[in-house]
Image 1 (tube, rainbow, N blue to C red):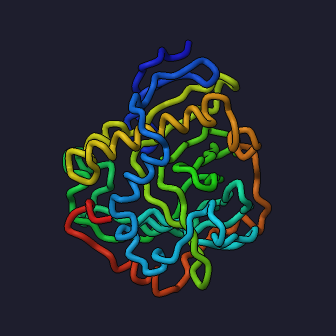
Image 2: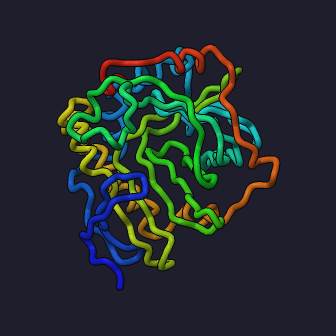
Length: 292
């Protein structure tokens, strides 16, 4: 028996989730505001996007859908940057429609962690964004993941799989549209927007749609990282994502990425490069996680 709409659960990563609908059967609206997608993006890009990365190269980064944005070749190793978070990934495909990358299991990443040794999810929600932090280097655990970043859109789609390789579901990560740089340290820059959507792999054609971390978005506002208007903008982006491709299973959900498998050479873990930008990122710390 399937859960009723409105049911709540805890995700595998520890976040709270609410069942808001089923593909092909409608959904509970995430946002009722009249804000356009461009207005929402503009409001959120004003929230310290450049300072979050602390990388001079960001000043020269070009939005992925614009003329002059660098393109990446298949098998290129690039950095996928969410402010302080930096991941080493491998390019599968890059064209005007969007960027597709693969993160092999064991690939390197840098991320901020609580300075007192706790895991991020172990910090109570009412203090989660105001605790001191330091950077830690670790590796992507579990099966590899395909990510698709549609050009110019404020989200990426992550195709998770179970240990046996079968699809586990698609994770729609709400984030700012990507900007790109080439050169010695090719990278894409974005900023995570806290709220996410999970599309379960079961019941093809009527998959469950879950809204994830709405409580964490509320905490971000309470602790000063986003304003109420910016949180409303994030919710509107979630609503646009459902309308634009989740509800009807459109691209990239319909392109077979849940079943795609890398060859042996592409599945070798990707390492972080030894560059001044990465070395500087390793040394970052802060007295509050509101910074970046």
